[in-house]
Amino acid sequence: MTSIDVRDLTKEYGGRRAVDGLTFDVRPGRVTGFLGPNGAGKSTTFRLVLGLDRATAGTATIGGTAYPRLRDPLRRVGALLDARAAHGSRTARGHLLALAASNRIPARRVDAALEETGLTAVARRRVRTYSLGMRQRLGIAAALLGDPEVVLLDEPANGLDPEGIVWIRALLRRLAAEGRTVLVSSHLMGETAAFADHLLILGRGRLLADTPVREFIHARVQPHVRIRTTEPAALADLLARHGHDASRDEDGTWTVRHARGDDLGRLMSEAGVPVLELATREATLEEAYLDLTAAETEFTAQPQEV
Ligand SMILES: Nc1ncnc2c1ncn2[C@@H]1O[C@H](COP(=O)(O)OP(=O)(O)OP(=O)(O)O)[C@@H](O)[C@H]1O
Image (cartoon, rainbow, N blue to C red; front, side):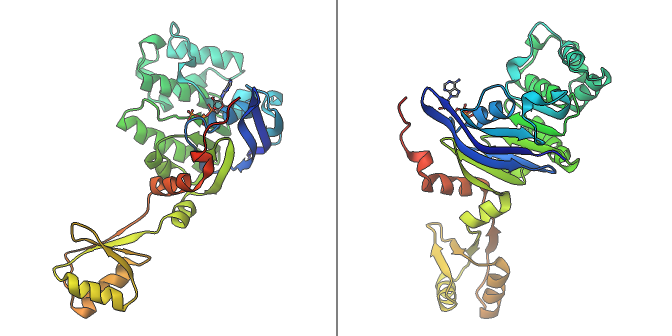
């Protein structure tokens, strides 16, 4: 199976580092989410991996080979960088047929890719009549055309409607389950948490995190338990006696950190404190990401001048 291996990758534009000494592997069989604020270097990294730009230093290889040296690259690596890439006067089918012909991909793959992306019914319409979401689907169809082992998608959910978002989530999960290597950039935290197993997080060109999603969330934000009761004084006393880290919100709800809902429920029941509500709230990727961005100077430092 094919992984993407990035070693000490650096790209400077006019003395300014867009990508700064990146080292990471993107492994097969899972979806890796690629996160970072605007200008962090995600698109530049994609372009370097795809040989569309030359690195100032370092290497990026796919299955051990630099992209420009791959034989039949579209059959090894599928990429969506810019959904506007298709020519407006072509039909979706024409666009994919031309791509297939110039990359020794059998024409039957065109119908499979159209079907996969839900474009079969509009495949003979000119691309200029397409909405952003339809263009995005066409870009994904082009990426999947060669049935590649490695898939790189830059903001694939861009412009998709809610049904499209559900579709792309399932598609990414399936591509990974088939053993492919899937790298996906996104600004949507909720979405990334729904499809990614692993995360790479960039800040100002540097790698800030290379971690499984669940570990990242749990290491940064504690789940907590929310409680409402008719006997706040008895609850406060009970929590204090058992050494719980608890605080009372303005609306009278208690938040207990570093605790399990099961344990608190049992404790309240044994002490006879009435429960109106007791809910465990898992931390979200967005909370963990904001915790990281608050802690890292890469997010808060002023941009360097050229
Ligand atoms: N061709 C270029 N010439 C000069 N500077 C560039 C070029 N391409 C990118 N940059 C700069 O490199 C930095 C990284 O940009 P990049 O587009 O890779 O970030 P990104 O993480 O993809 O951002 P976004 O989330 O906004 O897409 C930015 O400061 C950008 O201005």
